[in-house]
Image (cartoon, rainbow, N blue to C red; front, side):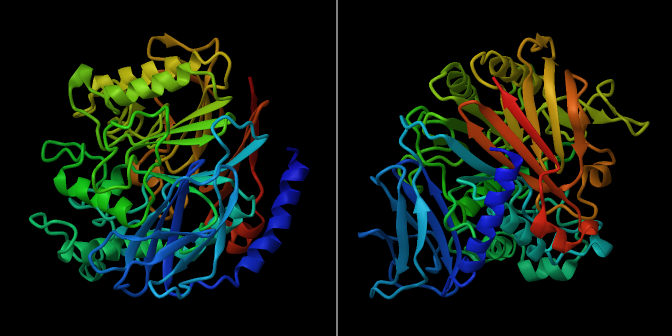
Length: 522
């Protein structure tokens, strides 16, 4: 697709979105659908409790809702056995058959053996944060919900076939190593509430606190605007209600019991689980739990679009280990799944999409690499990073090697977490020479980051390339808000990067164009 065709399609879809503004949500607070080729999994919340299960209509089929909270305001709907590659008319009704909102369309993905011409994907990261936070008291703030929604609305004008939110959907940290100490606002913390570590999440005061966090940072942000776009959500450190920190007083990851239950609770209430894929083992960690929809996963997912594209999504925090040279970011069985998919050339394009970026670092403890901020204010690997694990880097290098060995495909990673745009071509990882087929790595920009939240502010350094890797850097890390629109075709992949900062003015969001367009060919 040429630049002119790309922008013309966006202009045409603006009128469609404006017409959709008349869509009546009724008492629906949020709708977030997931989909594959034969199944739709919808998460919904309502502004009032429903005493009886509502129903999702998929064409003429009716699917009973399953309550996911204790009050009857949160429900999930799981429709299986649908024809692939078709647009389905969805509607919600109460137990008496009365409409709860206007109907809307959602399309299942093409069949696994189909050969679609094009697939368009929206990718973004770090959309969380309570807009009530004031940088003047806490040193950090987030873009307003209205600004984030405006960025989303601009992204939706490009009519993506699916969207990936890559980590940090909430910022409300338990030990206060990151957020909310930076908030510095006791009144806000009292309004949201405090979690009690001795209580379960559901059916206690903890459920109310979780809803206060999620409704302010998730439901109010997404609302119903993505109802016709299949959504995929990975989770990162803040999604387990903690910053990745390690010192002599605490090591925050892997998540402890309460952190894990909060992370699971967020997905249970707001985000669709990862639907099954025939090439992803059903027994991977975080999958096939008895309290989730059948066969679904929470930590590792697949976005499969016929034989054209396969995106491997993986949470880098929930199951990391602290075993020195034998440590991992993802468990061995998950690593093997990634390796197997990269070795299988049956799908034209494959992307690794981790919650934590390779290659770049801002000196955080939980990075793949050993770099840390030295006494001179520069990143270095000559100073020991406390509690960092050598095995993390070894796994990084194994995965990079497997990516580079995809001789028939573009070796490609897209990652979140880093609050920046960027592109690198990895020529060497540790002792592994990748120069015959360098690995392309992109950063996707950040959706909510504002004053104090950029790495150069909080980490005292902008993102830089880790000392362990040798790269070409077509785009050094750029601390800007924004997102990626990625087009997959048989001939290659085109990555369009969109950036914005508040000084550009809110109106500029409505006409954002890509500041970089990169087309990768095999």
